[in-house]
Length: 484
Image (cartoon, rainbow, N blue to C red; front, side, top):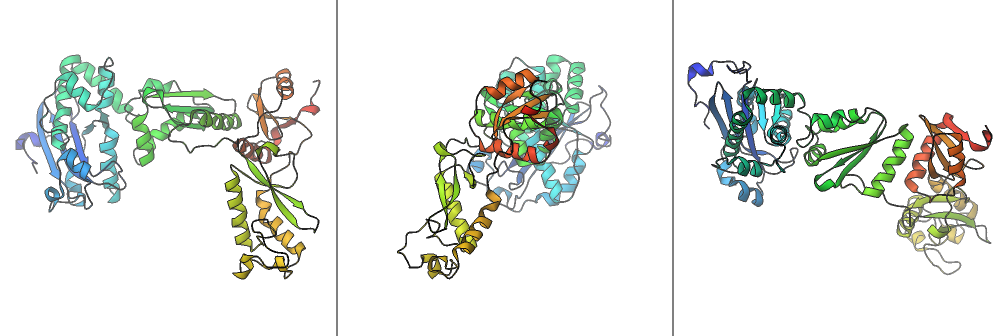
């Protein structure tokens, strides 16, 4: 560990002071780790080059990660288990590291990675760590916008930096210092200081997004879309305050693994304003199905929907009949239960209900048995015996209806189409199907008469919740205002 390459008198200067050219004290930091997950993986090496008064000090240390170093990481960094054996762990150097970084601007490439790992390590020790952070990816994008890319290898090639030890902490920290000197020589100290002040003020932004892109997002209700490189959709969300919600993603990226991964991949942000939260929910559902962003939970289209319908046979037994997509009319048909994306899912659900409530699989149609004989479930004490008369058919029917009741598909509670007022527009709905958005009465009736839409399970859930909850008082029956 090289802790003091600077003379004692110069070390006396407090880190919070600016140098003679009004630059803050800068700590160029790089780390090596066992992987990319700052909750699971650990730091194997830290290298810091501090710049103050045009003089440089160095601080570096190998660390025992106290966990396995994968072979691909060993090949990339050259750091093997033997090299870190006997070295201090993070806890042992934490106070020293914190003192070394105190009062300095934390400078790193893709700073969220290095800062995120070090912050997480301090957090595990219940130590607070909140330096000002400068990302050199952002600095490169700001000062050299003509460059197509701003990863470290591109910067090395573009500015002819001298590589001493790539993918080792001190070697990469030295590259950042070299890049800083290139910036200073190219744009001048005044412009560089202004860039630092601008970027440190927006330190929570992703490396490929500037403040003007955030400022353009309205703090109103709507959906926002994060795009990656080559305009690939990454994530779609909705909020009643879009800009605030977008910024919360980036703030969470400092501590939440998924948010950090998302933040590092964002290249572009788009948005769609909506008149209210309900329309935002409906638009979010549509966009996710349409664009299939890689980091959203995939929403399935309702093209193969099925449901169970209870129908009494000639013996008074309630029989679950599977109604498939072509014959399914949710909201119209009586005694529908479930709504499943496939026949297989429906069959699995009914089997699980039978087992949980000890229903007869023979009476449910899940097993064929000879008349007068018990089902297999009865033989293993998983059936109450309705198949052989130990439990009456009425009791079995009641148990089945009770078991399915939570999943009963609600009948459409209106005589026809309705409008749900949402902000300054109206959502037109009929039989749980979303027909469109109207902004006046003429448009509303035109949409209502234009035809039915295909039933969508996610839309059904959104509308059912809205009608019985947040928007219950905003439902307008169309026949009640006809002719207004």
